[in-house]
Length: 312
Image (cartoon, rainbow, N blue to C red):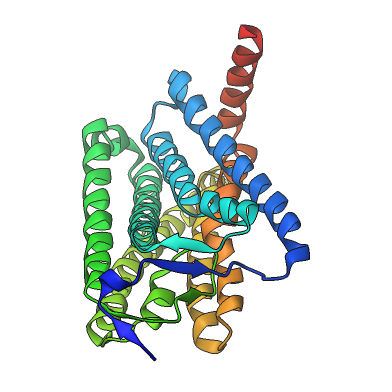
């Protein structure tokens, strides 16, 4: 196969979830609906938290950041897919592809970090309730977000810059609806050993370490909750953590599912379908999980909707 340096690769082809022309209108409608629900749902969460002073607490500060990251994550992938379906084009520029990789890694890493912070917040609230306000002060909350942002950006830049050194073959078809790093590396004609080592090393550090932190936090939480004498107290403590546990299970479960399915099957298209879960479905579900299971959030949303309705 013919190869050249990276400047020769002017564009990639995103094959999407299906090449069947009859399915394209259906895919367009489904993903447009999911995108709108995700954006407006997460935006409502952010506005409700901003406008309701009762929700100006560390837990809702992290939740608003999570909603913002979810909007950014879905906006990095779905609009390009919708444009390609509408214009019946599969192309994405070389620069656009690498930019998409960079932003996906950044926002996925940020979501990972925020979920860890939320677990730490719940740990302090349940295991050290008397010291909660002193420990989880606004300054510390901002300081927790900043390192997560910097680490995510550095990780994304590292992988993107390492991809810049690759030369690509003439067949630049990506069997996916967005530029995923693993698929782009498979198209390279040059040696990708260093890139693969970086992927496995960084994924292990930024995946296993945060997940271990969440597991340790919840081990301590369960231990503390079991010491509560009343059944009502135990239920209240577990209900505080319930929404976060569901989101963590969705995010890590679907994320690991992508890599396990990639290893278990030779079909890249099946891997792309699984990727829909953590890039589209999980961000869409987060607002429902946190609002439907939370009386304070439901109350804040009703006030916000009433305010918006009254203004019109």
